[in-house]
Length: 178
Image (cartoon, rainbow, N blue to C red; front, top):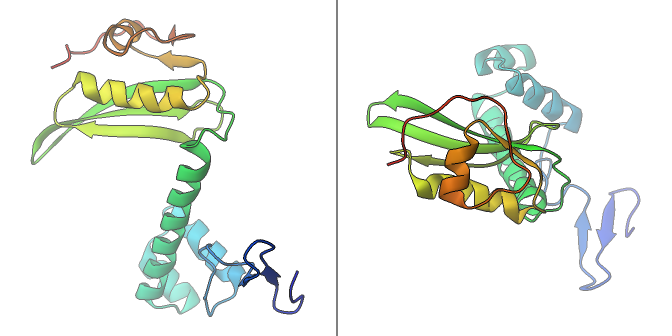
């Protein structure tokens, strides 16, 4: 520790100093950290921004900035821990969803950890394609080959190769792949 009063540290490799909030959403903020945590928690549970503005007398742009910083930090943590295979995911479940939009029908293939409900990977496509499923399965298997569960085992096995440890949860069938 370089300075205990300012919570500054020194890198042993490059000898530069840095604060404990460096590369976090709290870096350079002029508000108390507990206020930022409370506001982000309220946003996470769906509290409207105008209600937070009235309750805490904050500017909407400040709240939007905190939300952007927290989202960027969460993305970096996801890329560092999940995409590099540094987490024990346990059982992983794959699923596909579709919705209608102004551009037509969109398909979303996802994979998530069953125990932690952590989204591992997702892919959106305009049609239900082989490449969409392959991309999700490939990213899941890049992370230590976890036990895999899916609702449509035969299709995923046929279009993505053999998926070890895969268990069918429901016998429902989906429309054919494009």
